[in-house]
Length: 239
Image (cartoon, rainbow, N blue to C red; front, side):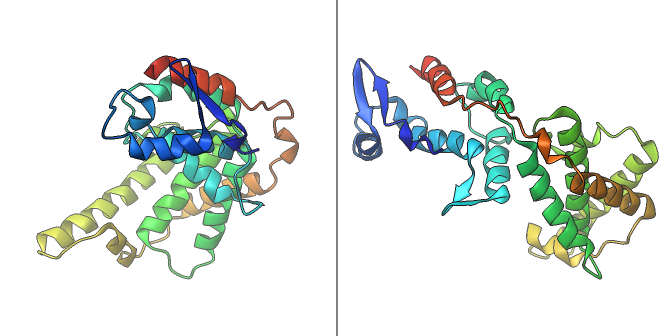
């Protein structure tokens, strides 16, 4: 279900269709700063809502698309002058489909563990995704994006301390390169190869096993598409 079925948006007593919205948002942007679609990418936002229900590219379900769309929404760096995130996040959670997120996390971890050597960045990502799988299964909602917030949900102090040590090594490596006067980019962190840690490896494999045997019947049979409610909340916030 794509949100393009929402063919019109009400504004100031009139109606803006999908095509006129896209054209008008460009041609009128510089002339009328009161138009709400000059302030927020409304068409992209409604498409985003649709992808939460059916994340498809050319008719094929993409767990990567589902994950990316949600990270974009929950990102702490997202520009949100109208406070829309707080207003509609509870409806987004109601639309949550855990299988898509778990599939994305498992795919990444499985690729990483097959490598003979794994970069420190890949190792930390695998840890994050394992923690996210546990959080997703337990709470039936998206895991916190910020690594430290998610790590705070871990109750195993030995595991947590081992992860903290790896995280410190990750940032120390970057700082060393900067001090050496080298031009540093984040992608250069793949040059730092991780030393495997038993307690971390055991945890990742334990969570991966749990995820791969996760009961797919947990998909919300009653899952609703809250597009109309979400759009109403957005309009009330910005008009």
